[in-house]
Image 1 (tube, rainbow, N blue to C red):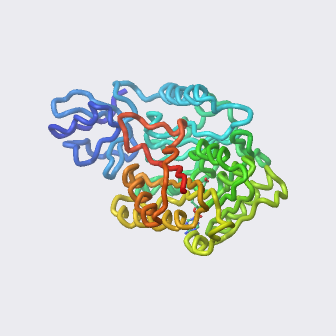
Image 2 (cartoon, rainbow, N blue to C red; image 1 turned 60 degrees about the vertical axis):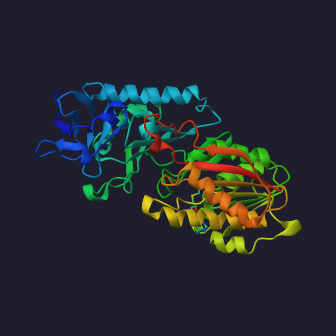
Length: 396
Ligand code: SAH
């Protein structure tokens, strides 16, 4: 099979030779007329040497590379890539009877740019971020069933596909979806209701799994405050870790319903837990100091900076938020603080938290430096894939 050919400008092939999986539109010298968004293309340098094959799309990232070896992109190609991703999760020990929630495909990290797949019990939730992946959705769905043995494939790309591509895609099942299907998934033996229909992202934040385990480890006897709790992942782990009490806070009423339901699923009528529907900054203003102060606080806010231009305000936001926690946390308390903004790097985040700590004047030790888990791998040639960072701090 031969695909339409794109030729790069002189001197623009270097990043592809270093296996970076994107071609920016500014690097393109020529492309055929009448290209359809999402179609497969082959990329060549200015001297006609083959570089890569990928999906073409209108926008600043013009090509998302699927392979650097000239080949046909057939059903077998998808099968090999998805099987490889599955093998990695098996190697990681994530596919177990007591753990059936995990990320199976993490875009560039799994050499499938534009594709995200999260697994929840007998359902895979698929998100396409590129038109190319959208066009392949049915093949991908079939291959997912073949590789993993699940029976339901839910496609949730309404908000992740480029708006300008005018695809008018609606969320829905590509395969299965019969009434009564299992919507509870298990993570490290804890059970969670997964609402892929209405929930954020694919319904659950699987990327905090390892960090939740660390919260469990530190929770014994502590008064825990879980800010921006969403489905309450951290809260449920803290309860299992024998926390003295756990307070969950989110400004969304739906999130408060979700956290209460997830706590009930694991620790029915546990008096140690209470959830509050309130703005985080308002709530923090009124939290107790002194002997009733919280001694484990989790700050896991939504991405404050979705784009580079919002960076300055985002950093201020992180500083402001963390400053209150440093001010109010009990002596010897432990602060888990996160940023999931891809636009904020590790050093910038650390500087924001450092500034907040200095404002409180307290002595602070960094105990752990956290990041996304291994089922959200970073392609070594694509450092942009690193997004989640966190610090665990002991505040004297
Ligand atoms: N910690 C969660 C994920 C957090 S997602 C987990 O482990 O799953 C971010 C959450 O912050 C969302 O549920 C959103 O409703 C909530 N949120 C956004 N702005 C907020 C604010 N100003 N105050 C409180 N919650 C807020």
